[in-house]
Image 1 (tube, helix red, strand yellow):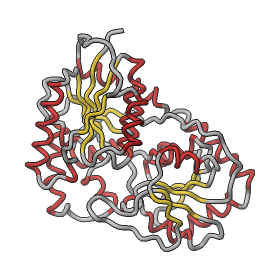
Image 2 (cartoon, rainbow, N blue to C red):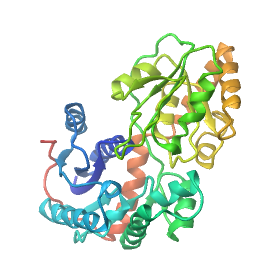
Image 3 (cartoon, one colour):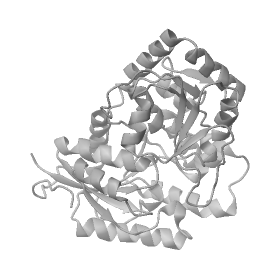
Length: 367
């Protein structure tokens, strides 16, 4: 099989890391080998080991993420450095998961996969015009999307938000996840949420209030402090801190009721992981959740802590209904595989390239 090389950007902070490794591993059977360019904070030992298991070359660039850059000039320097890295690695295509960096002058087609951005976050979480500190980030994202050879979003709902914010059409390729493979454990009467607990878009505050209405433990996995100093202090949730993939899978194996009150969620990998484990889902009634999980979850009006508590308590009190809800979630989750995601992205790559790509040699495992 002819091998093609892909430069794929990632960060070690959130779901893009998981997305990038799953995509890179699933692309290998399709003839792609990935060089993962890590932006932002360095990878820890566990993440480096995960990259090696995925069969990718990890380059810890030390470059800042676009949304953690000091200003537009620093973000542009990062884009230029990515272009140089692409040429040095002799890749056939670049996929940036931070669209502000798509104007990287790599000399090959560039795909911009947009997983979130400040403009769409602001439209969902706040109101009024973007503050000055966000304006240059949104402008860079608009420029990057315009420069890209193709734009990809993980849901049609988010594609609509991107079009509204930037006037750009996008291909929709749903995210996928390799199942954890952790054997199920006896079902426990607990509730779990997971993600960036500090992010207002996740609306952890609604779940914290709901937890105060429940008689069972409500656990929360994820960081309470964001990289820019945002802090969430729970009053009723039992904070577990940041869990690695194995730690979260072990919690999900007990099939707690999984809840997400997000008001901004372009996809939601944590929801997918919970569904793969057979957890009953209680989700905020937003467009993304409806698109992905309609018929396989219980929906509650955003911000309605009493509604979340009522829906959760009903499932906790009816084991048969809870098992049935978990089965429906698992059946739906089977649509969102890493292989299906890789097939979709490979089709976008082929269309963007417009011609057969010359092989670069045999695939190489991660250093």
